[in-house]
Length: 214
Image (tube, rainbow, N blue to C red; front, side):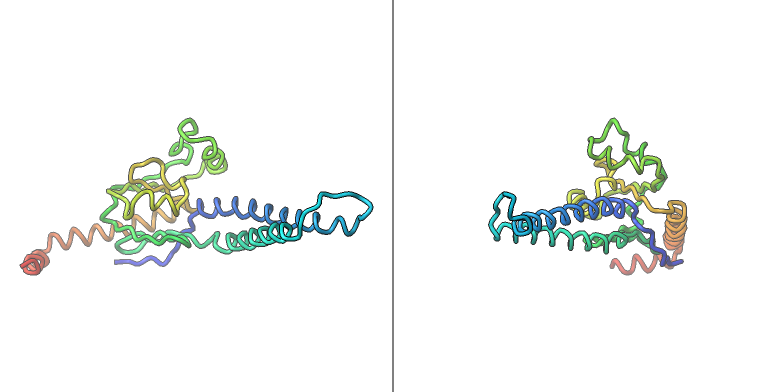
């Protein structure tokens, strides 16, 4: 069977982290400036009266700000580390905190759809509608499964809601080049199906299978 070494970036994951790292970085910088201002202004401008804040509180605020900035840097470093990769008999989905191998036996069918049709604006919450707005016209590859490889709550814990059109076992995969991903996936899955049919129709394989069960 052909093997794939091409990884396709999970665009939704990158999109979400791009939003988060900017917000957390801005928050961290604001906290550092606040702590520095409250601690330094009374010394620089003694002629004015400023709100008094004890040193411990200032250090805590500055520490939280520094931690938030480092967390932003961490988000920047992992924003391109999530991907999907088709293999000969399974699809691999990887994020920094989740690694799944989804067997082609679980696949029912695949098809493409626009994000705005998959997540209609009148059927999603306001905050999700805001997330979807820049992605509304993007094409995604939807994979219908017989069932998730792990429980849906566990998957929702590590993946964005934009991976799940509803509560049915479907995954919406948004990648920069949906056509290349779809071609890779269907080529490998087609080869896998052909191999399965050939193994089923081969009498020697059936004989070996029956002997192995005895």
